[in-house]
Length: 165
Image (cartoon, rainbow, N blue to C red; front, side, top):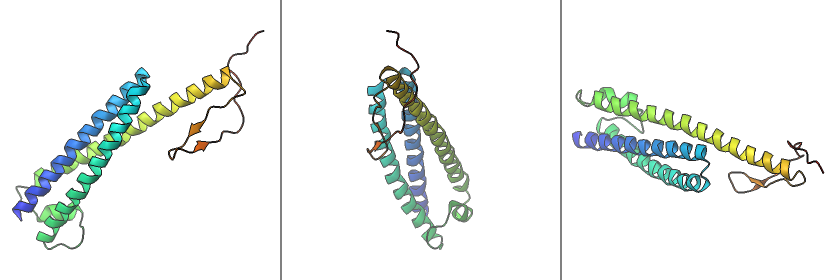
C-alpha cells in the first residue's frame, strides 16, 4: 500500500507543478495583452492549450493512483480524498492534505486569471470593432465564436468621429 501512496503523492506533485506552468503562461498572456502583442498572444494561447491537455492527462493518471490507494484501503469506486486521507498512515496525511490544498488554490488562481484574460481580450476585440465601425460605418468586421463560426451583429454603432468634408 505504501508504494501506491508514494505514486499518488508523486502524481499530485506533478499536477501541482503543471498548474504552476499554466499559471505562468496565463501571467505571460496577460502581459502580452497589455502590450498588445498579437503574435505573442496567439503563441501563448497555443501553449495554454497544450498545457491544458497535459493537465488533463495528469488528472487521469492521478485519479488512477487515487483509485488504487482507495482499493488498497478497501474503499469502493472513486471515493473523495476526504474519505481516503483519514485512512492513510498518519505520516502521509499532512503531506497529501498540503498538496491537495495547494492544487485547489492553484485551480482557483487559474480560474481567476483566465477570467481576467478573457475580459481583457474581449475588451480589446470590442475596441478594435468600435474603431473599425467609426472609420468605416458601412462595414461590420467579422467576429467569430469559439467554434470558428461568424457571429452576426445586427445594427451598427454610431461613429465616434464625424468626417467634415
